[in-house]
Image 1: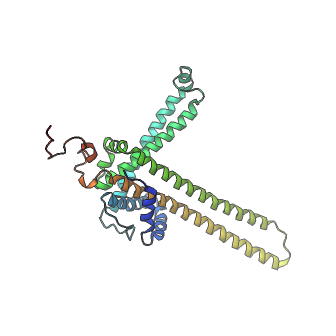
Image 2: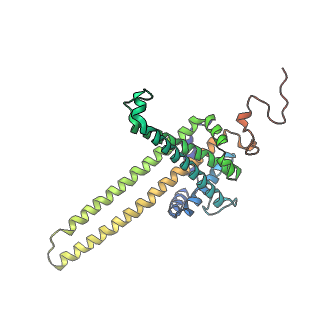
Image 3: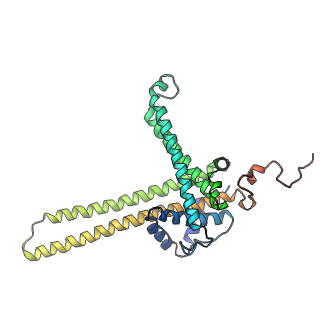
Amino acid sequence: MQTGYFKTAWRDIRNSPGWIGKLILLALVNMIPVFGQIVMYGYLFGWARDIAWGIHAPLPPSIFGNEDGALYRRGFFVIVIALVCWIASWALGVVWGILTGFGAFWAARGWFSAALGPTALLWLLLMASVALASLFFWVGAMRMSIYGRLAPGLQFGRVWAMIRHDLSGLLRILGMAILLLVATYLFSWAIVFAIGVVGIIMGSLSVLPVAGAGGSAILAVLFLGLTALMLVLFAGCVVLSMAGVVFAMAMVARSLGYWAQQFDVPSWRGQDDPMPFELEGRSRPGQVPPTA
């Protein structure tokens, strides 16, 4: 089990030539529905697959390079796995919502604390289901990227075996992802606040008394300047917020690649065969059991 996922992934991103431009370009492409997500996931999980195989390389030079010929297929498969995991999470939330509708009945029988309440219990279960869906999505996407086929990413029994083997490592990656997304969220709101301040100033200018044509011209120039500033701030907010999301995904994907290294990926066989860690303590195929 490797430690320091945040530090290692950040080092790899920072040491990639032109990484800022690549992330901003990915952010711009990511604004295109479906196609943008296919490109982003195909690019980042291809990079994650490389490090899972032990191939140390910077971010690929072109996000559309498609060096292995699987960029778009891989990105599409990642989206399919994500949809399956989130639909399962949603279905679980619906089931728990129906069940917790009888919260008062359960509390009366001591099945859970009445002080917790059905609403709080529902939110806790929803958050737990979302977190679990994220783990299944990430590990499934890594398996798909490593094998190059969709089916291994949907083998939830195999995915669960990997999760159980090193849950703590995945939880560290999940915590890192949450912190990065919260930072992006706060930054976005800071830009929104700045836009609001500019809007208030513009509203104040619109009711100021002016004297003569000269005063009107000055006011018009100020108004146009502030309008341009507001548009720039808004565009910057959108692009930088999306870049923050892409950066968080790049950190997660690279960290998942390092996390997958512990499973000795070069020794993997077929998608249905036991993984190396499952063979520990028993003979691998072709090995002669030790004699007593």
